[in-house]
Amino acid sequence: MLLGAARILVPREQRAGWYREWYAEIWHWAHFLAESGRLNGESRMELARHCWGAFADACWLRFNQERAMRVLQEEPISARFCLAAIFLLLVLSFAITGFAPTIRAAFTPLPYFQPERVADLSFHGEFSRYHEGTLFNSVASWVQGSRTAESAAGYSWSPVTLKLSGMRSTRIAGAHVSPNFFEVLGNRAFAGRMLRRGDAQECPSCAVITYGIWEHWFARDPYVVGRTVLIDDEPHMITGVLPASFSFIYPEISVWMLPSANSKATNFAERTGAVLRLARGASFRAAEAEFRGFADRDPSGLGYSTPALRPMESRTRQGTRLYLGFTLLSLLGGFALARSRLAASGTGRLKMQWRDLVRWWGFFVLKSWLLLAVCFVVALELPARLSIVLTGAVHPLTGPISTWFFLVLAMVSIAWSMHDQSRRCRMCLRRLGNEAFVGEPGYSLLEWWGTEMVCADGHGLLYIPELKASWQECEEWVKLDESWQGLFTRDGAGDKALIA
Image 1: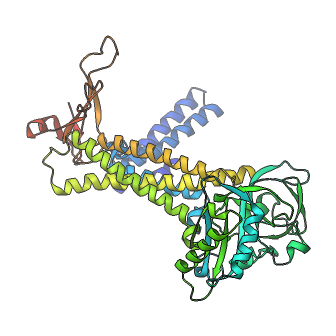
Image 2 (image 1 turned 180 degrees about the horizontal axis):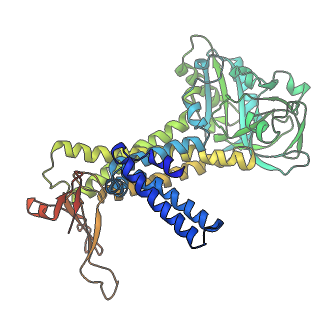
């Protein structure tokens, strides 16, 4: 039965002879065991395992064994294998991070009512601090005399401690907002209700949680509305759950509360701001000039900080755009460094055709771009994903960690891309092999003078010095002329192979 199944893989013209040869071998083996009295359960299993080898033998007849082994040896060093491997890594990074929700949110419409009329008023004061109550009182008074904004709400966020009954506490980011905050944005709750006007007197301890907190900390409890949690040891009642599509400038904010009436807490100016819904026909420039004047004339001290008004869409997506800018700068910087380094190694002195030059630099740019895309996705998504899995919320330090993680990954990727590019043939873009040491090991540093690597197709030879006497001593590429082609032969399958 096994031989009959394996016979299907054999080419038709060889099938009958192949089957007779295998059948005769198995027949003689079985009769030898029977005549010698050793045909038992163990020998039967050994004979069956041997029959499974017929499938491998049939495959090698269907596919040329020598050519298949050559492909297995040469394909991993080719340029297309390198690009395919990096692209697969990019796809895996998307899958592991849940198909990049942060990046997808940056390119989807904002979940606000008429988002083109929503703006963010931010403050920058070089570590200046002021009382949170000052901001909320000032914003409420500014909007009453404003001609460019029909409504406004303040916000102030900082790290807080969240604790459920019977569970450990965790450090998350929480925001105090004006009661009409979600009314200005125009959001609806996924469950329960949002904060609203009048809650400052009727429900001062109300809080709204994000979809991620509800999913990980409350296990999608349908009766979460009305439950009490401790936020900085103060009891708060959950009145609503934000929809999963909700996004804000600071994605790490996980809980939204009303400002405490008796709070004297101070906060950094960079962590505070206000959301504005502009009046119909009002421009952002006019609104910025008006509210900057409000801040400068405010007696509470907000004038020490520098206010800036920007469209909410621009503010919400500035993080992703910043990472894209870093990616582009890394790609351009890597291209400039590679051009100077690889030109010093002899690429610039070679008389290469323009098609070869386009292939050479095109492969480097595409390879580096794919690597930076992997870094972009991993650095922007993985820290937040891990923070949600481990703690159920986005940690306040996730943003800085993502930034440094991206910078480190980008530098490592560009360095590897340059190293890989310098070890490839200048003509066929395959990784050079057949490493040979040059000279003898030194007595002091115990290193060879250098290493030579040659292209298997006879295009050239690369000399890599181990001990560089100066910065001008770099890898040297030597193009092999026709006199070297005698060391290379062409086999019957059409592939070149080095024989010396």
